[in-house]
Image (cartoon, rainbow, N blue to C red; front, top):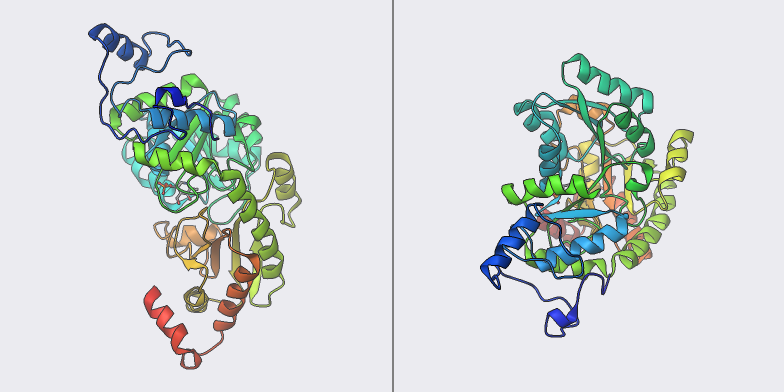
Amino acid sequence: MMTLGYHPEWSEGAIKPPVFQTSTFVFPSAEQGKEFFAQAYGLAERDPARPPGLIYSRLNNPDLEILEERLNLWDRAEASAVFSCGMSAIATSLLALVRPGDGIAFARPIYGGTDELLRVILPDHGIATQSFPAGSDAESIAAACDGLVARGAPCRLILLETPANPTMVLTDIAAAAAVAHERGALCAVDNTFLGPLYQTPLAHGTDLVLYSATKYLGGHSDLLAGVALGGRELIDRIRLYRTIIGTMLDPHSAWLLLRSLETAKLRMTCARKNAQQVVPWLAAHPRVARVIFPGSSDDPRQQAIYRRQCSGPGAMIAFELADAGEAETFRFLDAVRLIKLAVSLGGNESLIEHPATMTHADVPPEEREAMGVGPALVRLSVGIEHPDDLIRDLDQALAAIDRPAETRSVEELTAVAATA
Ligand SMILES: Cc1ncc(COP(=O)(O)O)c(C=O)c1O
């Protein structure tokens, strides 16, 4: 992660890649400009021993190319493309791979933005979509695909997010990929929650891996980025759409991500160890009804999927407060101090949010409830703080649920006002 894909001798010996903050590149000659375009549009083979022919930063840029080479390594992918954010990686990939009249089957719940894309935007453009519950077995996934066929839209792609945002339910990647391949369809997995350290979907038969790199890959809550990884031919098809639609990452964010990748393993390991201390503490707390964390489920099917496809639980925790509606849950959320009340995840700092009214607010209420996203559900992204500090903060915030507002200290009330 510190040297791959970068040649200091091409950049005045700089130990780190510079930010190539440029829109365009000067061609050595017209003949070479012609050659570079032929390579970029797949009309001619590129010699891997020579520097890539640089044209224009919507097509290619050294920071993006070094970053893509390093990301390939994590997911053991042949090729990748980086995007301006996770949603542009998902939307550009889906647009490149399905056509009006085709169908997409997807596991639900899924990130609220992706849900809106699948439920509203793609159907507006003639693409049929059909959901199935996260955690479904092969038979139920196949039934969703058959449902699409019955509506006259052959299933071209199955999209999973596993663990599911926000309920942390795992879906069997190998089973979904097998169902897709039996039908000549593709399987795509949003690997944002566990990747790249704790889950490698390509090794379980999926064709495409997607990321919001805004989360663990970025890790510092200071950038937006997305990634699509897979076989070269597939990524080339997606890359062409990226070039024409203009959803590529900018050089500065690519440079920030290169910095972030150097510590991805350290950050994710530390956050995972913290989460493994927080989970049993939460599970034992009388104010907590249920904790959902990969590998800690009582359901033998969930445990079997965990053992098969995850090498660690990550640091995302979902939990439900006991005897709580929205008001009680908000009292708890308003009382956290060290942990910040904010959406997003995967940063060094711990973040907590209320999926029903925040990340998944755009999902129709009755569908949201049916997916297990109720008013007492909270999503916690555990960061790299000291675990004792995190537990202390959760402890005082849980105690605040039952304390009337009048007895709160001036400091507490000021913090609540500032959060509001
Ligand atoms: C699992 C998952 N996928 C995709 C996205 C979208 O990513 P971005 O916000 O970088 O567009 C998010 C955002 O929260 C997410 O949680």
